[in-house]
Image (cartoon, rainbow, N blue to C red; front, side, top):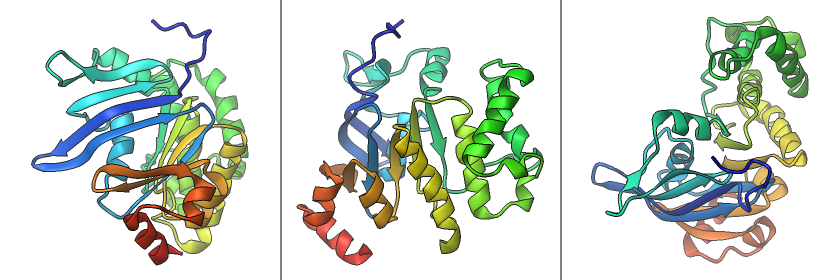
Length: 260
């Protein structure tokens, strides 16, 4: 068990991560270190491996080889034969609980109210009592501007409201790292701003975040660093200001010319 009194140098560390789907190599030797409180924007064309990278970090997908450390704990590392080996399921769940993930399509439980969506995982996974978690959940709803939707069902919410509930639900588990997989891609343009305001607030509070996004203005404003991926490889990893001022890789240059 790691010493929780001493903070690790990196909130997240990946070394030479490989992931395949059949004959398709989706991640081809990805290495990455993220400092606590750092906001990383992950950019790239569709199919470049961005979403798969996030899904491997929180073990929605298993890798073939490489290592992943989350807050100083080893989620997976190579065995002597160079194959990725994970610890027991209980350890995997505990380590992955240090991350929270927000998906493109909300994934809320439609038969539960907004409040019930927030308290379900802390009660069932962490064993918290209702009296303990409800005040925290209500505070999170205030944080995302939805305290008046406490007893509403997801079907009565707009897309932007659903996504803010999804963010609050992830935060209810008190993660150390938030992973956002294109959180605004399923929203109408006028609803995008309210979700991005919530993510900006988290950045101001120094939450460690990896954000897959096509919102270039948001990435330029909020991210400390930009990773640009192409064909399963990080081809550019630079401070956001430098990346947007003068991308170096030809694929990144073409991407920005198309997006800006």
